[in-house]
Image 1 (cartoon, protein in one colour):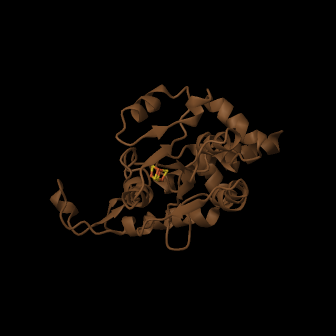
Image 2 (image 1 turned 180 degrees about the horizontal axis):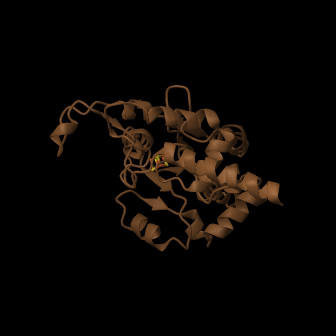
Image 3 (image 1 turned 90 degrees about the vertical axis):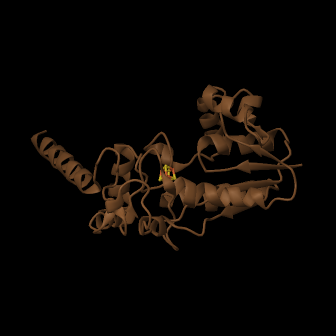
Length: 256
Ligand code: SF4
């Protein structure tokens, strides 16, 4: 039986690995599935992927844990420019590119994040127990692992850790991702579920990535032609909103 931990760099999966280390739980491998924007640019925010590769992985390895980074053969841009040959419902979409993923039904999760994980487990010869980072105050998610076909264990549940306690534990070990300085959650920098605080952070700190989204929205012939296809919100609209808010702040600063 191999014990494998899924790791995202978020507080819960990081705290699970810290608990495995503290309590000498069996841990044969840590896997991290990295979504890629294109062949060279990570889908993770630059400071988060830097945290994972240059802080977490060396620390876990110093504890004797092996870490494997998984990647799909598909990138975000591959999915974005995928041509739809046989639309299931809307015939007029035939020949168009998929474009932006649908919030709530993200194909990037399926094609770029979960796929390499499924393939990895499919090729495993040994029986596996998976460690998942689910806190004791996440009852619905805990319910789901109890009925899962695959043996899954939450070390946070086993050792009575809430989400806040997981956060504090990561902080204590200096293993808290910098994303928590500005957002309550992580995710791809192009995620259609991103909140304003995440979008603002992207625009203010990674303008090159922000501009890539603005450029993508100008692509013709897209099914998902706006960054958030569900609310029909475009990044161009967000750009306007943030510019307007910044301008107002400047005026108020001047008046003060
Ligand atoms: S973080 Fe967002 S864009 Fe990335 S896989 Fe999850 S839902 Fe999709």
